[in-house]
Amino acid sequence: MVEDGIFNTEMDTSVKIAALHAVKSVQASDAIDEQEDLFMEDLRMAASKDASYEELLHHVKSGFPNDRYNLPSTLRPYWKIRNELYNDGDLVLYGPRVVVPASLHRSILARLHDSHSGVEATKRRAQQTVFWPGINADIRNIVRSSDFFSVAGKHFLVYVDRLSGWPVVIPCGSNVTSASSIRFFRFMFHDLGVPVRLRTDGGPQFSSREFATFL
Image (cartoon, rainbow, N blue to C red; front, side, top):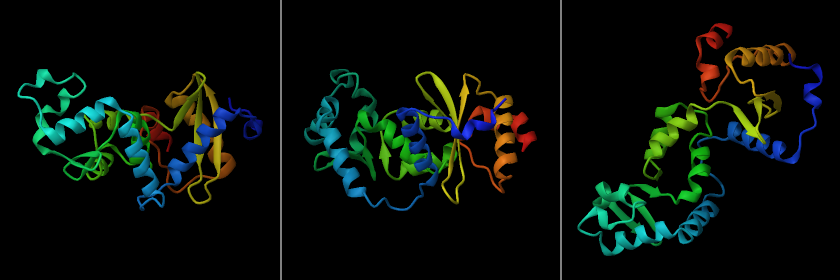
């Protein structure tokens, strides 16, 4: 049962930071980021610090070996598309898509999914902008997750009013089932009003028949 004083629950710094990231994700749009140049600089910096990426760049510039097994295992997934890779300065591109260093995969996935679209829509965004081997599987995994986040083994649900950006962060313990999610949402709808439209990441808690019936 959610306590009435939940909105006044004190959160430690790490929880607040995670909540702010979640709010930023909900509020983001498909507009061009004002800090795109800064992002590209971060991309180049990450590429320069990634030994595997540097080696990939070398092969793109100088040619791939005759046998894929002469490549390190980290570069073998690029073998089938080696003839479609080229470079723009110190970045590798695959068609119109920038090949992203491993250290930025997580942040790029968050950017791709900032509009909380489904799997196919998020894939389409990726197909216009970024690439790495296995990106489609990574997209499926992040889209099928939910609006829950975890800090120090504890789960929290983030509920945000899209118009005002006002967030509600609810500690859920280890209970993130459809039944518990319905209880949390019933509480919020009662306290904040029933929304015209509810958007989620499409996690199993929210895509279940039980949750659809509740809505």
